[in-house]
Structure formats: C-alpha cells, structure tokens
Length: 505
Image (cartoon, rainbow, N blue to C red; front, side, top):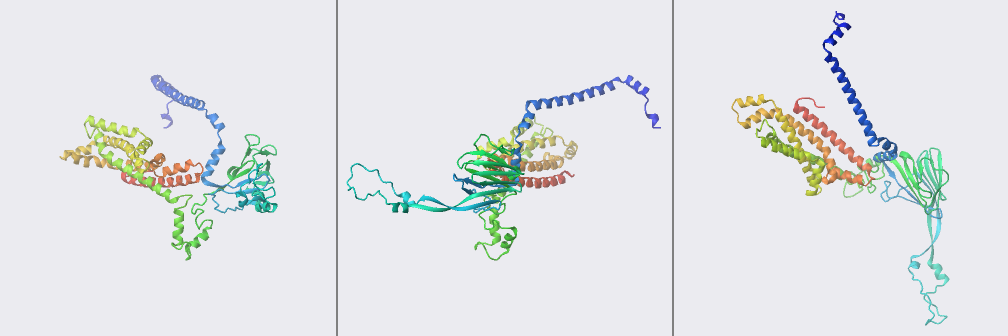
C-alpha cells in the first residue's frame, strides 16, 4: 500500500510539465541562497583586507596580553640590586613592598661582608676651607695661622666607618630559573640555559655571548631585559638589576603591612581573636581585626563596598523614577488610548529624543552640570530609561485586546475605570517585567557611566586602571560587580516569572 502511493518517474515528469513554475522557483531559491553565501564570503575577504587583520594578528604582542592577564591574579615582589663600581652591592625594596617594612624573603640569598670606608665626619665637613694666603700679612711669619692644621688634627677629622655590603646575591624564581650576581658578573639561568652579562657599576652592560630568546637588548651597552614567562622578569643595567618575581594570589588581601595581624598564619590569627589578652587595650582583638580589614590601605574594602552600594542605589533610583514618569506618558503616546494625533506625536518625539542620546553621553552632560557624584548617574539613567520604557509601554498599550476594554465600557464605566479594569490588568505585568529587566541592566550600565565621574564603583574601577599597576584591585572590583549582577539577574528572573505567569530563563 505504501509503495503504491509513491509516484513513478513518468508521473513526476508529467507533474513537472504541468507545473514548471514550481521547479523554476526552487532553482531561483537555490541561486539566491548561493548568492547570499557568496556575498557574505566576499564581504569577509574585503574586511580581512581592509582592516589588515592578518597583519595585526601576526604583529600582535601576545606576550603583553599574557602578562596583563597574569597581573589580575598575581602580585610582584620587586627587589632592586644596586651595584657599586667596586663590585659590592646593596639590596633594597620599594617602600610599599607587599613583604612589609623589613623584607627578607627566602628566595633571595645574600653573601655579605663588612668593609671599612673612609669619609669625613660631620665636623670636618662643616669646617670652612682656609682662605688663600695674600702677599701682605699682618701676622708674623712664624705665627700659627687659623687655617693651618696639624697632621694630628687632620687625622681626627678624617673618619673611618664600617659598612656591611653584599658580595653575592642569588635570586630564585623557580626550580629552573634564577639569577646570580657576583663580582660585576650577572648569570641568568632558565630551563638549563645559562646567559652571562658583565656590568661595570656605572651604565654599561656587555653580554658574554649571544642573547637567548628570552633576553632582549635594543642597542649595545644598554639594559638587557630577561623574560621568564609567568614567573616574572628582570632588567639588567650597568649599575642596577631590577627583579620582578611574580606570585599567584592577592597579597595582603585581609591585613595590610601596618596591621598587627600582618604576616601571621590563619591559625595564629584565629588564636589571637579568641585570646583574652588584647593587642589594643581600647578594643577587642575581633573588633581590631575587623577594623583592619575594612580600612586595609592596599585593598580599601570599606570604600569599595560603599561605592558598590552607591552604584546599586543609583541604578535602582534612576530606573524607579523613569518607570514612574514613563507610566502616565505612555497612555498619551498610545493611539488607541489617546486619539489626539498631536499628543501622540509630541510624546513619542519626546521619547525619541530621550533615548536617542546614549546614557554615557547623558552622564557626561550631567557630570558637567551637577559635578561628579551619584546625582549625575541617576539623572543619566532616568533620562535614557524614560524614553525607552515610554516607547515600550506605549507599544504594549497599542497591542492590547480591545474586547476587555469594550466590555468594561459597555456597562457604563467612567473613562478612568475603563483604563483601570480594561487596560491595566493586561499590561501591568508586562510593564513590571520590563522595569525589572531595565533595573538589572542599569546595574551594569551604572558601572560604565561611573567611570566618567558619575560616582559609584565605576569611578573607583577607572582610578585603579589608570595606575596601570593595580590590576589585582581591578580584578577584585570586577568580581564584586559580577556577583551583584548574578544576584540581581536571579531576583529579576524570579520576579518576572511570577508576574507573567510562566518560567523565565
């Protein structure tokens, strides 16, 4: 039975002869699809050529991108090895080193010795030099002169001082990478490959052999940069070696170097929190620890959290005011609610004007008008969302089912009652759903407009990015923003699913 329903080849030919337009249309459709695919392919080739994408990809400095990403999840310790002309060295750390005021890491091994250096005492330095003798002198030839010094006096003025200097330094990055400095010779080792450089203690660096792939020198005698990948890098100059050793994690996230809890293990901190003996007599150890966390000078937790809350409030208030203003205006813009053409067009053009200017541009205007702060951000969100929500609300009103409104009107209800019972039940869930979506979206947008001075965590984020060195702080704030967006997205989805009566993903 099934086989009998399948037309034969002769029948197919007969159908084709009777209806040739069916086959022609399918051929035209195939040609149209081929033309579209070919056009897209040619356009992609044009874009590749016009924007020189191949050249950009081949000349891109991907090492910088890797270092940039590593800065988000790691920190650097930066010892400086100063080399004197006599070959002795001195190791110093930056004032804001993550190791604290007295750093002594185990990955920096030093050999020291005490040397005696000559110098003038402060008294000798303060003694004025004798004036040049004149051919005419009131003093007798044998009389002692004020500027004359006996050998004993000069020996008293000359002073010797003992100084501890570094004669050899070894900096270990990892098990296969280290730098050794001794007697004006710098030896760098990476993955079994050794590279030696001679320095003069002044400004000259001379490589002792060909440069490996992980070493660069722009011109002979200038500094040599050693790149060790994720573990760090170093710069070798004639009188100084800059070490950049990288470690995974965020240094001093809870307690900064000024905290009495700094450098202690979690067990020691926990024991101090439970101890009855107070570090600060004026407060408990728990209160002191919480205060140190909030006012951490490196991470500024309290300020970051305050700015994040400011961003959330800015988005909420701006969206709320925009919803309240757009709600009555949308009834004037809807043709089926307000029959006046003039009122429809005037309100719709107002909506077009408000939403045609981007929120970022509005933020620039209001920052200029009101000064930096949340007021500028709230105004920017309010203006943009009033236009967008007003347009969406009016379109929802124009698409309602008139049967429900006509039913309420047929019983003799007043115009206000018609809108209350015949229109609002249809559109109110949609209005609330759209307002919730914009509230969630504006939480992200408030971060962007904050960067131009509208306040909130956006401004804090921009300040951290401008330093070009606090990328771990940038990562911290980005994570906080993501957490807030995830939470608000979940809340918004749950509320909208209840309002529209279905499950929203």
